Image (cartoon, rainbow, N blue to C red; front, side):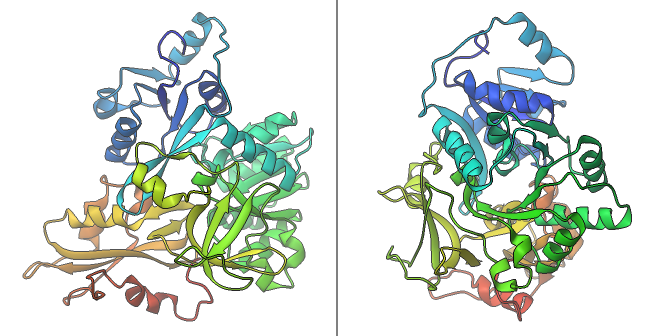
Length: 460
């Protein structure tokens, strides 16, 4: 990279999991450049936005970038054609100067106000996460960790540095497939892995249908959204290893709380709903709207402080100021409470966000796509319970007078404008205007309430 870029440059990476990805995830920051991982499920407009917003001049990819992407960078380096290997072979080794405060990467996450935001994580942030991971969930030298979650997510690589640190092995799966995952567990003697709840459920079904030897598993971690108790129970029974619930976000590098030995709490469904406790060095507080710290058991917004907390959002000072207070506490947008033992429980989200299959979907992004349809007068989006994905994207649409719209028309219109996982799974229509508050804000809770009736919490 010394010959084709400058220190501090941002370099975009758009590729599936691979040994190359692991190498680049480590190598780009160590070369005093910032990695900009691109979600492989993004639509072209989303890829273009993140590339331009980051100011990335180099794109490294394992696929044809097309004219839209290749036209906005100075250079495209292909992993799949041998170009990347040729570049490495021709370059001398270098030892660029980096410090703990050097920017390691921009990790893009959606925004409640529309455009996605580049989360700035430093070398210190990523190392803090590695330390917290090792303190909360000690890895061993003979561990064999399966990277099956997408590495473009901070959660997908949450364990990577810790694995390398202790001298354990990373086994990389290009893309998740439950049968392939279980085959790898058996063939490679995998001892641990991380999954989102939908992946865990798929693994349970695949193991039930065609059992493999999974006795090497020492632990399975899961996170991104709450796991259904029955899925957790079946997974514990079938895999027979420790289950660990992880809580965090990209802004937290990403770990903020860990619930170890979930499998020992199956007789206590209430405790099993916990996200766990903060690892050493991380602070958790629950606050009300004016910032007052609330006592044990009272519900408010979850805030986090520690060396894992991001520097801020790239070129977005106002949104950074809204998320981080003067004392370094990050407002997560999650609503919950702490019990007397320091265990965190989530009950809702204050952010206008859905978690579907482990992916964050910001409602405004979907609403913007729907509103671009000329037949739409009003639209709102929220999450509804879904057995497979935890939550599914649901839209409520008010058509313009005289216009007939159906579910297929809205769904088809959204495809190509936003990532497939953001496209509504279902759409309902009404002739009346959407219900609104005095200031004119759509009352989403009123619209989503029937879907969540009877649930003990408003997230899934």
